[in-house]
Image (cartoon, rainbow, N blue to C red; front, side, top):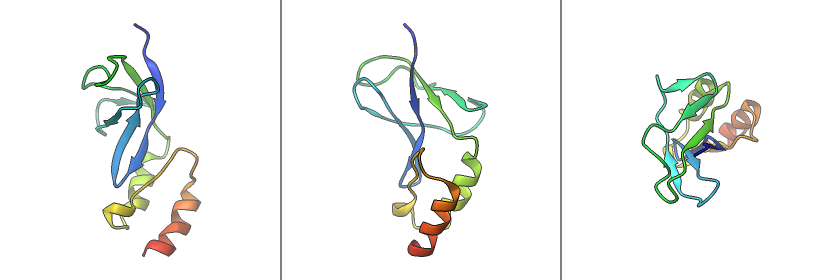
Length: 95
């Protein structure tokens, strides 16, 4: 079975991916299982549809974490279309 691609995002401080087939949200671990921008979901196939997933990580994930860490956990959100500059501007609102 060919792995399906999805992109990592942050919701309330958690790195997540959404299965493109069934929309199940999967919690992603940061660390040695990431290779460059790609992360193969190590917890098994999608819980909903059983497809294996390949997750695209942003090149600047560490900077995203650092920027979001200044906020309360409920406000630690990021999507792939947001820039670091936008996150910094939002920090002015949330802090």
